[in-house]
Amino acid sequence: MFRGAGMLGLGGAVWGSAAVKLKASELTLRPPGALEDDDFVKACIRCGTCVEACPYDTLKLATLDDHTAPGTPYFKPRSVPCYMCPDVPCLPVCPSGALDVKRMPKLIDGIKTEEPDINRAKMGIAMVDQESCLAYWGIQCDACYRACPLMGEAITLEFKRNERTGKHAFLEPVVHRDICTRCGLCEHACVTEKAAIFVLPLKIATGEVGEHYIKGWDKADEDRLKNLKEAETKKSSPEDVLNDWENLFDDD
Amino acid sequence: MMTSIIKKNRYLILRRALQIGLLVLFGGANWWGWKFLMGNYSSAYVLESFYLADPHAVLQSFAAGFIMSTDAIVGGLIVLGFYALLAGRSFCSWVCPINMITDLATWMREKLNLNSEEGSARLDRKTRYWIFGLGLILSALVGVAAFEVVNPITMLHRGIIFGFGMGWTLVVAVFLFDLLVVEHGWCGHLCPLGAFYSLSSQFALIKVKHDADNCTLCMKCKEVCHEEPVLHFIGEKSGFIKGACSNCGRCIEVCDDDALKFSVFNYKK
Image (cartoon, rainbow over all chains, first blue to last red; front, side, top):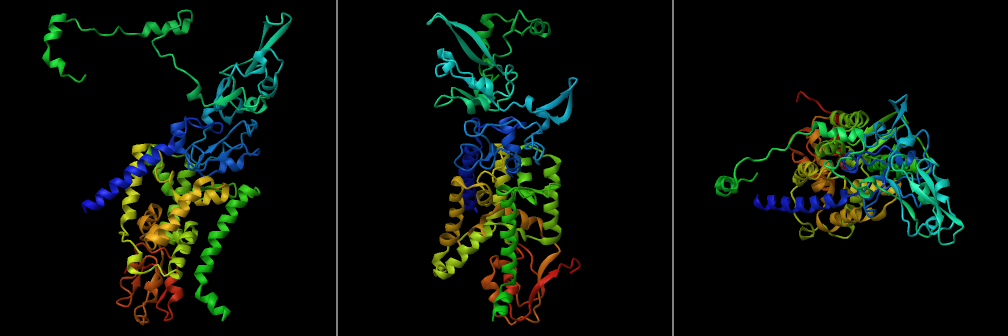
């Protein structure tokens, strides 16, 4: 009896740690409409129907050696990017709700519909490594800019004077986070040996400022101050606090 | 001669035909774009009109804290209803692809004379029910369908349909475990999916019926049975085979006395 319980505990510990390891997928790019990664891994039933529905073989089903939850769909834009099908065939076939239209609804007059809008997908974020980007060297290359399905919106070219030559311009690609769908067509098109523009999952590639910073120059942000309550501070004297033995052992 | 071989293996032939046929239909969807059966055994999109789903996977996701969409829940209920009310635990021997791997291990055990007393470690057949429960607890603790991330069954069918990667290692592990460690080790002792189906299908309609009056006590059925304890009353009294029986039909094929056959469960008795 004790032996059985012990074996069960042993098995559970090994199994549990394997499960923790095997669900880790922060670095994975998911199909359009995918839930946030923790929820996605919970929700995905691992059937591969989205993979079969993808007409470009963009989506693959992870195996044990893909550094993401086995059986879940992912894509690597440097090999095959997402070609942004207007009808998003991979999304509606999902039986489990791991791919959800509500993550990218088509807006008609600002009202959300039940249809997906591929231009509102947020699969990751495109980042430019300025050190290895030819355009930042001063060599004219706009491969990513032209490959972008939202050319001139998601990636714009910023013109700057090239002081080195004195007579040329830099045409620097700049990604606009709110518009970029992270399809990876830019990464696919990039001419450098290892792509200088590449897509990363949002969670990995973005920081967070924290609520206590407020943009004083932004009216809406400044208004957040109005709802703030003053933090409660203790009114007791320092001597009282030092002699308060009760509080010394208080976990709070 | 030929007909008697076929007759002696009639359920085996049907089971393999169904198992391989389903794999071909699933594979055809990925390789050639067939629309009969898209997806895999975890969830299948049938004729582009409705879904089937693995109820155990839906349950694990629920334990992990996610309620799946209606498509998957209804799909899971259809499958669960089919086995629980009608077909019994027949998923395991008629549909599940890993059954072909473990049957191969059983067959090789016999050929290699590995069936001696010391050739098989002892393991309680109830272990699978504990693993089934443990899987649900771990799903809740870790926040992911715990069995699905290590499931050798899904590794096998996903491997065949979509490509193996290193998934074949788990399949080989199951094969070697059955071959060298415990006879009928995976399907008969460990698999939580089998545990789930045998728990849920106790009152299914299709069951093997034993007729003790015809029985000559040859005990061939007990030799071929992969869930031998379910045959504990053979020769003593007539009745329906219950418990972990997976309706594979081996005992029926081997019986020369017409003492075992598929029948419809009688709830009154």
